[in-house]
Amino acid sequence: MNEALARAYPDARCELDFRNPFELLVATVLSAQSTDRRVNAVTEVLFGRWPTAAALAEAETLDVESVITPVGFYRTKTASIVSLSRRIVDDFDGVVPGTLKELVTLPGVGRKTANVVLGNAFDVPGVTPDTHLIRLANRFGWVASTKPDDVERAVGRLFPPSDWVMVCHRVIWHGRRCCHARRPACGACPVADLCPSRDIGEQDPTKAAKLIREPRR
Image (cartoon, rainbow, N blue to C red; front, top):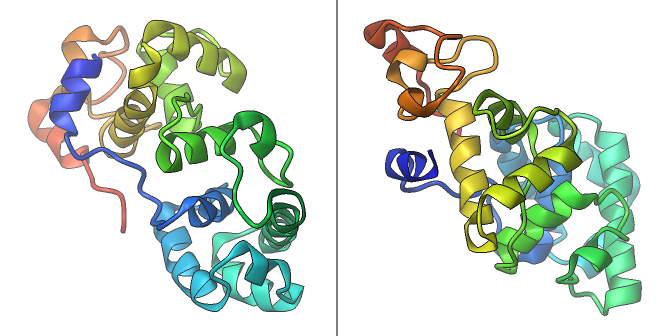
């Protein structure tokens, strides 16, 4: 299945825009309950005004809230990104730490966010159990649980660490484009022949093809 997804999505990658670990960390925190499209639009403005942890650590709360409002939960997210910036400045000399143990000590950062940053900014293998991975791992028969920790462990056992980051990207891309939550495009799915859930969605190839969509950018 991984090989088939690799052929189907050769350009699979993190769809959050970032230039360094700090930008990816903040963008990932902002992405909760939001779309990458909205986050990318917001972070372009956000990092234009506060490009570093030191700068964001000194930002006024209301100013940050006014910028990140479109991503939702802006008060909670503002508190998180300003607080984590202060912690990075105070405890890590202004540099985003590169270990899971250190990252999860930052405000608003759990294992999922930490693994996104480690895998995409530091090339450290990790499994990111986001909504799409949890849904598809269950449909694929890789795991029988919706608990993020269970999914992370199950996927980690199925693939070598060197594959973890790209497996997650491919599954996430597939979930966004083809294997939708409500009406998966099974008749046009590149892994249908291998999938135990291949009968739950649209079977007609022509109709299924119309369901495939690129995420809004």
